[in-house]
Amino acid sequence: MNDSLGTTGLILNEPLLWEKGKKGRCGFSLPKRDVDVSPLDPGLVGEGPDFPDLSEVDVVRHYTRLSQWNFGVDTGMYPLGSCTMKYNPKTNERQAGLAGFTGTHPLAPDALSQGALQILFELEQYLVEITGMDAATLQPAAGAQGELAGMLLIHAWHRKKGSQRTRIIVPDTAHGTNPASVALCGYRPVAVASNEQGILSAEAVATVMDEDTAGIMITNPNTLGLFEENILDIAEVVHSKGGLVYCDGANMNAVMGVVQMGKIGVDVMHLNLHKTFSTPHGGGGPGSGPVCVKKELEPFLPVPRVVKRDDKYALEENRPDSIGRLQTFYGNVGVMLKAYSYIRTMGAEGLKKASQLAVLNANYIKEKLRNTLHLAYDRPCMHECVFSDRYQAPHHVTTLDMAKRLMDYGYHPPTVYFPLVVPGAIMMEPTETESKEDIDTYIEAFKAIVQEAQENPDLLHDAPHKCKVRRLDETTAARKPCLAG
Ligand SMILES: *Cc1c(COP(=O)(O)O)cnc(C)c1O
Image (tube, rainbow, N blue to C red; front, side):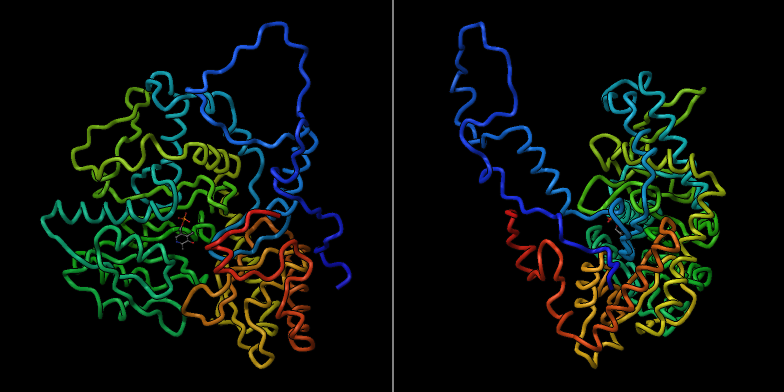
């Protein structure tokens, strides 16, 4: 492809600052000193690190070059399934950066934090409306912490009823954090297999649900990008044995304004504000995983709670049944401000439209690539679609080879080898923010790669060719990272 997005022309090499520095270079020029030198007390400052001497332009070029080796949603399409790497409008950053928010201190008294508290209070209400639940906490700092909070809430609810249960049902399509959160809370995860349609059946759940099982943790839409259509019957089975239904709502981008989970049997769920509600993520920045609950679980929510009394907002600590604090203060408020700004700028209709377009885009890719790649489940998908490398097996080309080659074409690879139920999975989530032209070019790139797989498989075996770093030994790269360029 001549018009591929990938190129290496002006990507420049860059050494470490320590290798680049030259003794005596300086990044500033100040007027001559007119006071005597007063040495620092060596007992106080000790032996400092040996910082390199650099000019201003050395430093600016260093970090600018490093930033150009990076790839993000602001650079191009990032179809990483299960992650919702949508474009995040800059206005949301701007609102979160207003001095009134960034200058506030978490220990400031409530009376001086009315604006921030009002936003947290209203954001909880918006999330409650979007999910169809009754109350929410914004404290968890990630989806995974939301899951743990949810498990603790379920545990506290059972304990209050005087019943101590030991197991939680987790489907085989679950994200790895699900069984981990279950285990961290002291429960034993019990696996249940999804059916040939890629979803759970109420019958399968009924075979493992018993009176020692505290509940089920179900992702909807699930990680195959499929809606768990039997959720009402599943909830019925779980509730009839005294259990609760937890929904991993990381995939809410598919159903905002379309499905209220609280109306289809869910008792507790988390959202990932950094996925669905416009915070740039990936690379471990701050996140937010609010948990929404039904009324009977509200007393157990973490403290402090944001409350409104006589038109004043306050943080309330005195909740005897609470599972306690999850954060020193109140979680990642900056992420909450962005979500608030996003929800207010989109409005109810806009959020619904975003979900509809996310689903449309994923189905468009699914249909356009269905003869190119093996489609794992041939049914309408939600916000993401899952293929596999089955058609490429005769050419000894794998999912990993194709994902690496895609970088030469200027795209971040999709999610690979997840979910585990699909061998060689390739999971694509275009999101609503990609234009048809961009999605079409992506589809063409994938078709070209599959053509290469047939005609010249070796080209793929050592891909990428044009990127700053070539094929890595991923285990060594993770265990012994080489930070020098
Ligand atoms: C991303 C994700 C999680 C974990 O969320 P974090 O915010 O990364 O902790 C859990 N479940 C599913 C389905 C996800 O996609």
